Image 1 (cartoon, rainbow, N blue to C red):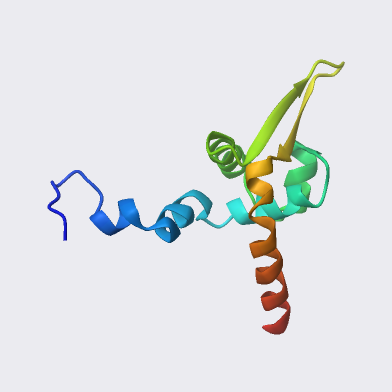
Image 2 (cartoon, rainbow, N blue to C red):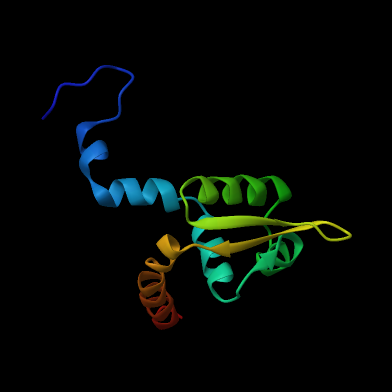
Length: 111
């Protein structure tokens, strides 16, 4: 195994695509956000929040920012009165949808 200093992540973490993907998608809400956004062309913040029962404003904001940072969602500011923001998934995120469909089907079996 590769030498590492105390501040670096373990070698397997840097090289394992599954670990990297789970770091990006991990947490209680990120996959749920992607799943909800995938069902609509776009959603406003409060609309999305209504679909995610129990999520706090801070958690939704942080999760949206993280997903946007990883190019999985886009944030579009609309100059209307009143102004608002809409979120939608990106082409990169669409590549995840077949895996989420499989998870969805698997979840139906676990009732």
